[in-house]
Image (cartoon, rainbow, N blue to C red):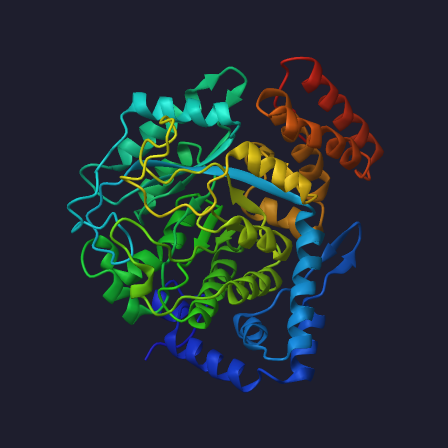
Length: 482
């Protein structure tokens, strides 16, 4: 039997079933161990380090104890610590993005996704480059600067050449003051050579959801198609990093398997990337299984309630304090609002999960990958964030300044990333307010920017950021960044 080894390149070693089950037994046995839980909270607490702060994080086993905790008073301390860590590293900034679905042709048989090959009645679509252009202009007219492109796995319909051509098209479009400055990619596991092509095309983060780390369940949920290969899929991030992509994004689809198993596997994957490549995941996503075309989530018996979902987010934030966390429009406004306080640093806004959905005035449903719970416009989401005292950020500066991978993490772990992110967020928000915001949103936004400029500690940075905001308001000059 394989033994747990985070430094191994073999999936069954670094996502070791025996280790996960021993972890869950250990966590259950210590669910009311007050001294142990308090010691873990103390270990994870932010500590001042020079001009920044430092968090030790927790191992998958330690974090699993927090997730299993059954002491109400300690659970509240877990939530409070997650809030402290979130503010220490990400402040009140929330990065905004939108998914862009290129094609829903897929050869896999995934039982939880309406794009599965056996679904003969869903409308199959693949965008032409002209249609990609229209989608991007529609997204630019909303105010988006960051996209995550999505496509089903179909080597004939969606080859790597099609993905690369679409990325080139996206980056080439400059409409009015609009431009997509970062393209993240969520496509099927592939080869080192093709990951290198994506890197050369200028992508930001490569995102791939594991769906479930339980190998037995994984094989049953993916009965046919190339995605059936558990090891190839699970080892994809190593190949991506070998191909030069140093920002990768993990995620599971909560609701497919027992959430405590998935939680431990997710953190073990993060530990593996840190051990082998010297840098953990750039982001972790937390999607929950939702209703879609021919998919009924009630057919799966591992759904989690909102309180459990919130605790998962809090415990991930404590365990991997430096990693960005993403929540999508799968979740409604109330759930997203709570999650923002506990660790989420990126959200989608104004999303459409159908192929070609943005260029349509009325939201189409015939090719959606999942039902969208939060159907507000981007402008409504931006205003909502500001009313909750968050700074909506359209910043892509780190990616374009080469602050990726270990360079980003070294700044983040020292707390120095705050000196870049805060002013960059305010300047990109100013761009949004001038170019796209409704009067009601602008009315909320400008006082917020003025207040937050005053909170930039470095005098020179504060003065220069204020000058750039003034330039943005007075002219068509854009894309200032620190």
